[in-house]
Length: 251
Image (tube, rainbow, N blue to C red; front, side, top):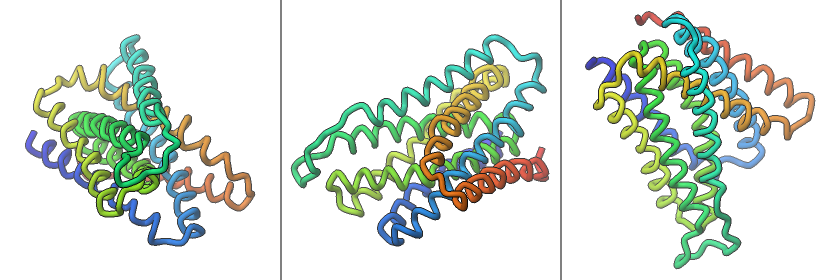
């Protein structure tokens, strides 16, 4: 159990540090940044689909027959992440961010991101309780999804009128909510049955939603042949990475 605690906490701390990559949005030229994000969004979609079909779903089926509860919890996972996106996009304010006016969208973005990260912590800890390789695979999938997302979140905070240092700090603070997700799962001590029936199906639903409703539609906005080939190859590389993780020397 100690090993699971260490792996889970180290994993969510690494995921939290990804939030600091938002600084890249003001360091790199837009041309290079766009190319980088094109690769990252595609790769993230591949890792999430790979984690679902290479790691999570096989683990679910190995535990026993697929049940109605599992199916409903996969749908619940889809609905949870659909609702999270609604929280982020709930309110829009047309006033420019000023020193005395905190842009409501920035506040909602931080709240939504914190909730999202809290759930990521739950999913990562639950995956490690299933097995170390599944936990690592889920962490990798979350990291590659977080890179473009955190850069976008950082952009929202800057647009709201925040200073760079404050935006980085608040973005990192919201990312640390994932630690509380780990503490909830490992502190409460979820049973193996609860992990299989509840957490893993919700992870599957969440990853399917993010990959298919969030990431892939974003890729369709660029129809250039060269970029489309890069997108396809990146998705395949993401899936290949998940397959490669099957050979990790862990039980």
